[in-house]
Image (cartoon, rainbow, N blue to C red; front, side, top):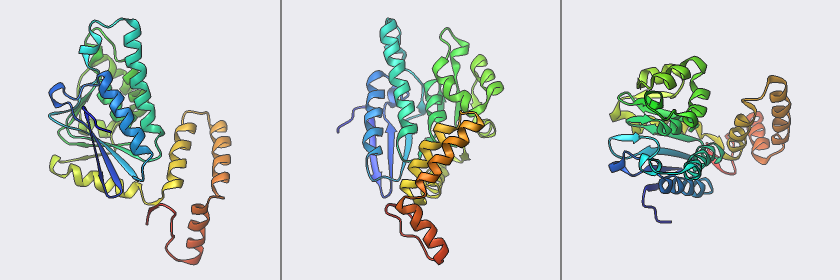
Length: 259
C-alpha cells in the first residue's frame, strides 16, 4: 500500500521500515502509528528474514504527537495509547527479528520503540529519554517497555529525572545491544541482522514467540512451558534437518533461512 508517513524498502533478505515525518521529529500521530502497524503487518507476512526500524531526519522519534493530545478527550487519548500499545506488541509478535537503528534522539514513546524492538543498535551520538517526569504528563506507557529493558532502579531514574542518557549509558544499562559511529551504523546494523537470522527462519520465529511468552513467568512455569515448546518443535522438518546435518557433518538445507 502507499504510505504518507512511512517508507518500506526491501533489500535482499531484509526489510527496512522508516518513520518519515522529519518535520514533526517522527512524532507518533494516530495516522503514523496506524501506518507503522500496517507496515509491520505486511512485512511480517512477507519473506523477509529480518526487519529494521529506522527514522528519517534529525531525530529518531520524539514520542507521541502532542498535536493529537492537546485538546483530546479521555476516549481519544485512550485510543491513541492503545494504538501505540498495539504497535509495540506487534513488533514483538512478527516472526522476524526487529532491530531498531537509532541514529539520533529517541524520547518518550520513541524510547519505547527502542525498548520494544527485539534488538537495538545506536549511533554513538544518539540519546535516550523519557521526559514526562520533567513535565505534567508522566511517561506511564513508555516505562512498561523501558523498565523491562533497564531494570527497576535505572528505570526510576530515567522516569523521574526525564534526563537524556547517551548511547554509551544506554548500552551499559541494556537499552541497546550495540553502539557504533554514525558512519558505521548501517554496516553494524547489517552485520547484526545477518548474525541473528542465520539458520531456520521457522525455528527462530517460534523461538521469538516462546522467549517473550516465558520471560516474565516464574521459573517453574517458564520451564514447564519451554519443555513443551522445545519437545514439540523437535519434530519440525528444520529441526530434523539441523540434527541430521550435524550428525552427518554437512551443511543443513533449511526450508527457509540463512546458511
